[in-house]
Structure formats: C-alpha cells, structure tokens
Length: 60
Image (cartoon, rainbow, N blue to C red):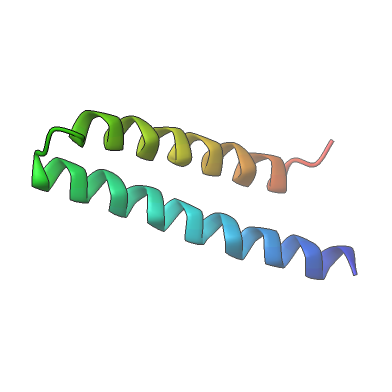
C-alpha cells in the first residue's frame, strides 16, 4: 500500500514539475507585467517539486 502511495506522489510531483516548467517558460516568452511574479511562483514550485523528489528517494 505504501508503494502505491509513493507512486501516486511521484506522479503528482512530476506533473507539478511540468506545470512549473511550463509556467516559467510561458512567463519568459510572454514578458508581461506579471512575468517576474510568474517566474518566482514557477521557481518556487520547481524547488518544491525537486525537494519532494529528493525526499521520495531518501525517506528518513
């Protein structure tokens, strides 16, 4: 059961990572007024997703 939960969390993290990358890319390409805010949010999501992946592979 724990393995299934881990797989679900991994899939959710990968989706989150793709959303973050997409958000950063869109904001950089658009260069709108909110681009800096979007980049910050995207980077924050990206960092959170990376920490989730690290935690997934190193459960202490």
